Amino acid sequence: MLPCVCRFQPVLALLSFTLLTQGENCPATCLCPDPHTVDCSRRGLTRLPDEIPLDVRRLMLADNWIPHIPSDFLVLYSDLVYLDLRNNSLSHIEPGTLSTSSRLVFLDLGCNNLTEIPKGTFGESRSLIKLRLGNNPYLSMVNEDAFTGLTSLRELELERNALSGLQVQALNQLPSLRMVRLEGNPWVCNCNFSNLFTWLVENSHKLPNGIEGMECSLPNNGRRVPLSHLSQDSFRECQITLTLTDFLIIIFSGISVSVAAIMASFFLASTVHCFQRWSKGSKGDEEENEE
Image 1 (cartoon, rainbow, N blue to C red):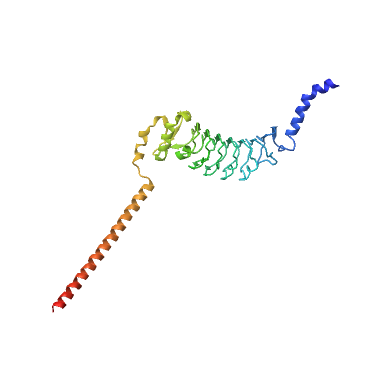
Image 2 (tube, helix red, strand yellow):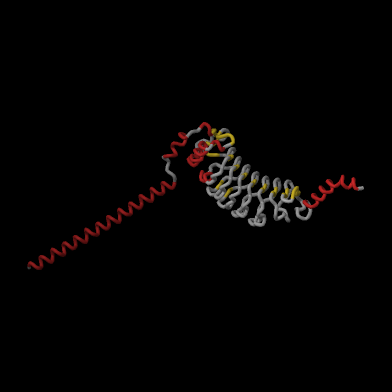
């Protein structure tokens, strides 16, 4: 009997491990291949699962129908380093939701319905190394301070979204950036795109294929042109084009000068008038004294 028992010990150990990892510490609809991993991918979930272990490190929720993440969801999961939420129905991420994820290294929000990335979306997740935001067909705006505090971020994916422009400041706040994907967006070759074009040319080594394959639309007729066919001279007119702010400054400066000139003229006229009256009064007094 003993040899038989010894022979089945590996099988019994495996069964025990499976029961422990898929028991009360694992959400009912998910798999837990190890004590720190929860895999709830492709489960048809319409909300976040209950009873996720507090010491989870890898949480996979891809290919579901989750529309929303509560702002306090990650407060209890301080050990989380890997979060996969791709291919869900997320339309927005509330600012501060990810600010408590101090150990988060990998975050995938691709293939969702995000429309914008506002300031403070990621808090200051200083450990974040890879961020996927690609394939969000309605993502048309990224705030210039959206990535503030992501000092360790090396890979950023923003491909195949609805971006027509992007503030260079958003990219300049990523000192550790090594790779960025921006292809497949409906870029518009206007003056707002000029600074981004310069950045892309100077940092083409950070693009997987350089600027090859990237296109933008001409503002006058909408024709798509490859970025590789453009140069700094293509945006020469932008260097002398005045923005709305410039026009407002000029207008208000002109108004201020005009008002100052009017006030100065009024003051000068008042002074001359007073002087004339004083002169007449003095002359009258002299004549009376002579008589």
